[in-house]
Image (tube, rainbow, N blue to C red; front, side, top):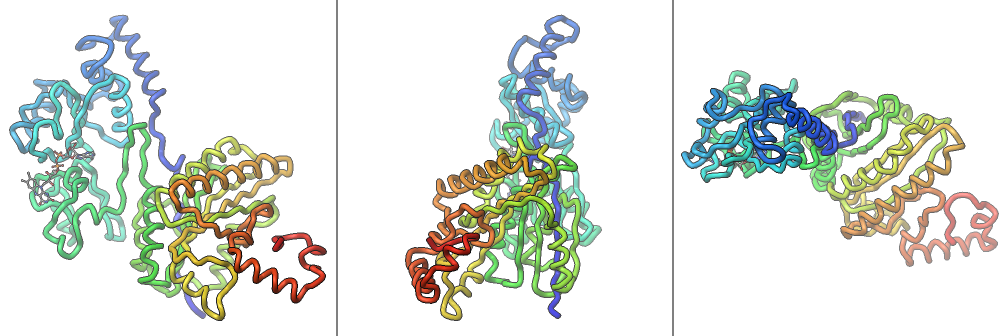
Length: 474
Ligand SMILES: Cc1cc2nc3c(=O)[nH]c(=O)nc-3n(C[C@H](O)[C@H](O)[C@H](O)COP(=O)(O)OP(=O)(O)OC[C@H]3O[C@@H](n4cnc5c(N)ncnc54)[C@H](O)[C@@H]3O)c2cc1C
């Protein structure tokens, strides 16, 4: 019996992006702080109500011990960390040294509330004035984001954006490991990697930026993102790279887990040979943050049992589908649409709503023309992304709400795909809902052929009329 290697990774994706702080929350804290400051119960160092002095004082109040002011030891030490004199002679009102992405999220919002201009410093090797230091503003110094953690399988390392390469190399060297980074010890991980990153090994492995598996990113709205974008990218590249290794297949599902009130991403990784962690799947296995994995070698029959267990019977069910081009940004847009519609349904009894993606590779499509060719009309060369909206729930009373939401998710996803020219007319019959027009997607020629076959072998149209269920040619 043929053996399969299977891994299911479940990645916690609360809100897909982790909303760390919101502007409203930080504004509210800022107002409270202003009231205290105006009443004189807090000593403020400067003029109210806006600007960098206030932003510095507010952060000093909200996140104690992370702000340093001129003439303090920490401020002077951090100012000495610039390579060029132009940058070292630049004096911000204060320097902020976050200890976590959450701190960065808070600061990014506080800076907006107080309208304070800021700079960000990693290794401080940008040469010109203002690149990573700011006169009179606030400089976010990443020095305390200095994690260096090698994953247990030794294939990747989590590196904080405030590290310099010397610290990275000297941590990894005793383990017989290295990464693709800078050639000068004091260059920062942040600047070098974001700009490109030519290393001693670039001839063989590319630039540093090509070797980053994923970034944890704080956006201007304070949200912290990582996991979902990395998974979507991995999915996209599987579609692109599939011709180099047709043994791999993937199903990636975004789902809401009601019991823990969180969204998760589950990637079912299958490989048609008993090989642990094959290279073509490593974009998935490299993504950090997995909360569960069932990676193992398993036979086909047992694998189908595992898959069956994730699709229990006895509930109310609905399936809807569309086909789109292979594109990671579009995946993110569709996930956002799905989440918006699921949000008001989170308390529906027994709800398990999923948005499921499967790569339809060029290899798969190439087989469609074998044995005389099939009638599906899927003539796009791909790679494509087969999208499935799959919701189960418990109570018949919720049917209308659920079906309305599913229709809205479908409409929204179709509109998003259409807007970027990536909507494919094909509708996969086996995942379609009863009202979807499956056969139009097969194309006029195929539909005419199917109707001709039906007329020839079923002249009274028994199967089209007397058996009304399922999809009909007319
Ligand atoms: C002596 C010297 C040797 C060099 N050697 C190499 C080399 O071998 N290979 C190579 O490719 N390049 C090299 N460079 C160029 C170097 O990669 C760039 O100057 C790089 O921008 C420096 O990164 P940094 O983090 O040290 O600088 P910084 O001044 O701290 O950062 C540079 C820019 O990136 C931004 N930034 C940094 N981290 C973040 C972050 N986490 N989030 C958002 N923005 C961030 C900063 O705001 C700033 O605008 C060298 C430069 C010098 C001066």
